[in-house]
Length: 74
Image (cartoon, rainbow, N blue to C red):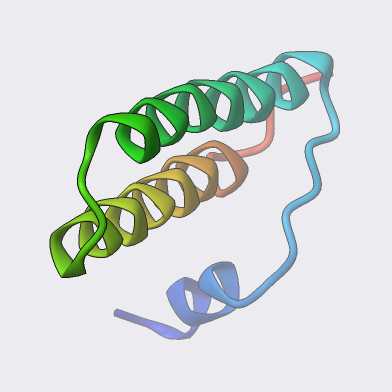
């Protein structure tokens, strides 16, 4: 890892195109749908909390993958 990698990881990456904004929305809505299903189907407990926490982590990393990709040409 070099300084450029560190800067990329800790810099805000706004969704400047409609395609990226839609990709973020698709990730959020898909994760929400699954989260609600898990919430309704799983019994309360540490395992349910872990599953929902990990799904939140999935959403974070998926959105980071969208946001951190190289800039698109105009």
